Picture 1 (cartoon, one colour):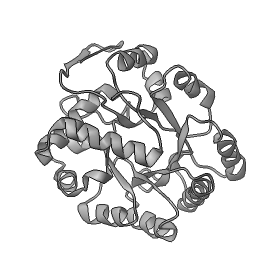
Picture 2 (spheres, helix red, strand yellow):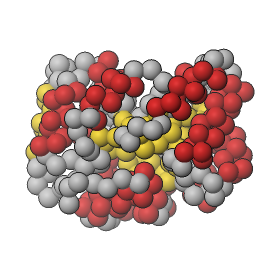
Picture 3 (cartoon, helix red, strand yellow):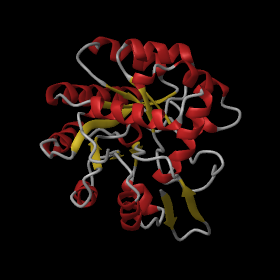
Picture 4 (cartoon, one colour):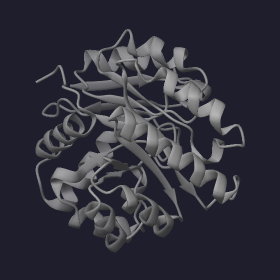
Length: 280
């Protein structure tokens, strides 16, 4: 299987994956990729032709959902979450959450988020962030949808809040960036852990330790495209086909065949998001 993606920046990514099929990306952003001038229609056609499996497009606000939905109406492997990123939160809480709830009957929406806490950028007041997080949790429980959690330097507060809903809520800690002790606490609450391209960076020993200690039945992998390109593409615009580098890194780190990693991640996506892949 060969992925060839041509964009308007000055390189072509071409990978021969003769023995790898059904790779998935559990977290990327369509609209941000379009903003980076990526030919998104060409990308989806290539993904389809090369038997890629799940793609999950993640919401960061309530705007432009129909623009996102246009693509999933064309491609069965594409799904969406809907939510308001903590750095996009503001005082218009009720109206914005109402718009989120109005979209939930669409069958292509399989999760709430991304939501959470971001103490790194200090853009939005902490109490406003927490209010939005609790609103997303309420929608998740009410609609029986998993939640996608964003965490930047806020692990203790997130654990404190999420522990109040243990057993009521399923979800994933996306782009995990903490240590294995914190990881275990999220695992104990029932969450999946998703690793992105930053886990492949040479000095990221904390995440390597986490990868070596995660149960395979809680593992997800993502690109967070167009951000966080893995080694050896660090610093470039990211797209979901680059996720092969993260799969390969996890495979080598665990000394487990990459095809098994692909199978385990797909199984976890099916269980968490309650969807079934078309390609076998």
